[in-house]
Image (tube, rainbow, N blue to C red; front, side, top):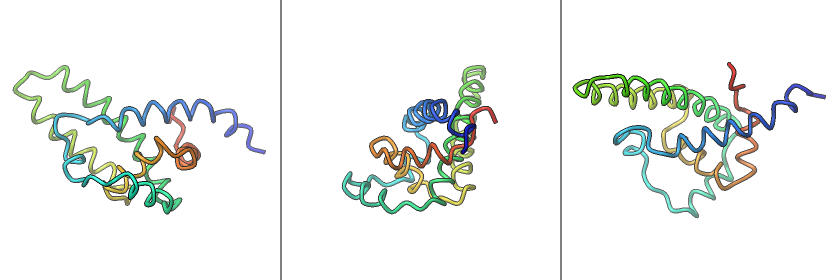
Length: 137
């Protein structure tokens, strides 16, 4: 019996909900992740979501946490930077987000599809929660 995992499940679910809310909002001004991901009709997204491997779920869960951390860090940098530096910081942030996602072995399109699916599909959401690293780490 996994008492530790069971005890942290509500906290992880809350963390996932907060992170999903963050990552679905455009990260910064015109992020490349959004411009590189093609729009997909909802029916195509639902059918693709049904065939998501555990490997992609795990990679997405890790990437979600990394993207949320990057977002927090870069928002602070942007807020503290002079106007002349903000565009450069935004570019760096967007590149870091793309790298954080693709370093997990998933494409930007797969990441976007899985995150979108998790918002409306409880099965995908539960799988992400199960694979998500503890927020304290």
